[in-house]
Image (cartoon, rainbow, N blue to C red; front, side, top):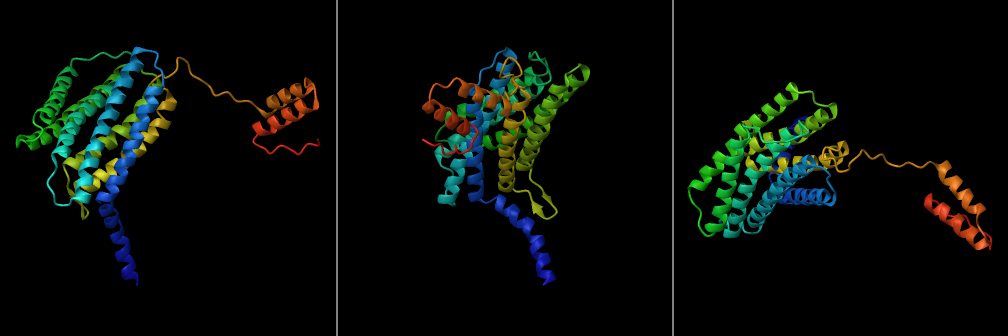
Length: 312
């Protein structure tokens, strides 16, 4: 009995790992992630931004989210085909979205690198070390978008080599240099504690998990009997991304890193005594019985209570 329980406990992590890589779970988790990203985009577009730095941050964050949305759409098409048409080759329509997704993948990481650096200062301007990366990322974006549009029905053999080179370039030279220069900027200048906290939250809960999970996805390995296959890592990455987006929506927005309003807004809090004093004043100015009944019912309704039965 103890041996069976031990086997069950030892087999549970492996079962969960396989479940994370199942097509059905991936389709559900990616759909949830897609909805969250879309909600985040709508939230950002509904707010007003009052300075250039905030507008630049908004544009970069929208590029990051848009890139994630395009990648999720490509995964949805691919997973639907594998669930309902197993063994069939990738359709032309799915291949089109995969190319588009790779172009936006490069754009997303470039925007993320600029976004991190911009959080370290009030005024943003491109530095000398950012121009080469920006040019290369834009060239990769144009390459994949051009392949998707101009070569819709044909796939070239060099594309798969381009996928590998692109992933290596984005995950290592681009992100490592971006993090290095960002933290160098923080050490060389006096940066307010609020900005440091914003950057720490964004780096710890968004950048590092995203990069590590993407590294596992593109460079899988075997550890403690677990094969870090692509599908399982994609499932884990999608869940982490969804939770990260929710966390950023609550925490980073609460820190006003996009300066949605001109000034810090404190929530208005009205105590019971203020409401009750207003209620008494309204009673004192009431003209008749009907108005007294209306004022009393309205008072209890605002407090979330059932109004008492009044004699007519």
